[in-house]
Length: 401
View 1 (spheres, rainbow, N blue to C red):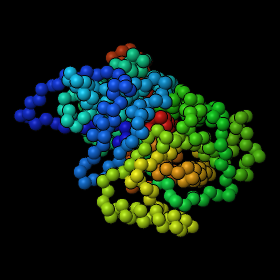
View 2: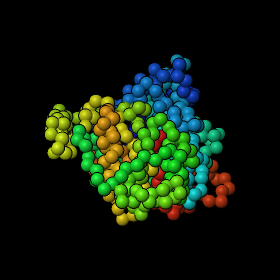
View 3: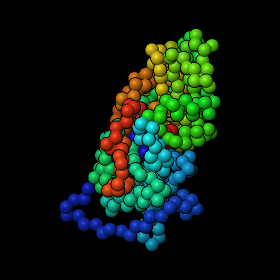
View 4: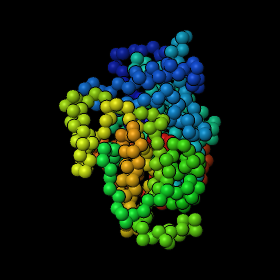
């Protein structure tokens, strides 16, 4: 997605000659690099002139988006004798399924930034190469990154210069948080599952999916995880016993991750008219909540996001139960304060995709995942590129968002 990779590469003109600078890549040191990295992040915030842009506030913690992985690193590119920080990249290594219950060690690359004044020197490529070397040392067999398919500079950098291949395309669904509550059918019960029970169910439901993390128990027990919730028809409550594997014929399940305590987002660069229209809808919704107007949240000030993951549904009522769960999460976000949107990311063939409420205007139709075999040429019995998963489901780790 566009939040994950923000490298921009500008082509040189034929007549232009640029002397390659002296670049040294080191691991991030908070005492030495924090102030410089925060300055670099601000420099890279600027979007296209005259167009709205979405900026990220890491809330004083440059490694916040990788901190919750056991194996993680942030690298900085330093220029010249004074060690000016001109580029950064983040990465982590985890064990996930590649489909059909087969696990593999995988690296995830994100947060690539290069100073606007120091682009065209190959700094982005050098950072990627150094991060790949670190990931291989940690045992990673593959590496992947994600970006909006319209981000041509990022796609070109990874596919044309770094050897990545376009692998999977997902959809990011965004539902704004309104001032009113969303109704939930009185015939539906929403239950909160203990983390251990949720993990046991997920291990069964997502064993054949792709990218399902082996450390799911750590995710579900993390303080940022607000819970795993299950919606079932009330008429099946008396027969429901998940500890013994007795599930109702229809149900829906999902988990909620609180990113608003990790980073904040903010929309900048909108016209005064668009700003006034958005504020107007919000005021009407607050004054007359019984009308349930589809109002626009205040995204012009820093706001947080609830990310829903582990979405699954069963039975003929599954889609309706999933909609009830999404309404339940919306009401959680509305009461929680400071949350502007609920976000889900799903594979394009995932049956849950059509059941998740969202606003198309604010969603990403194509979030491109590119992958690379870090041990290409070595003898392997099978390769992820050639062994297609039997499941249409791609499990999106909430720590990746």
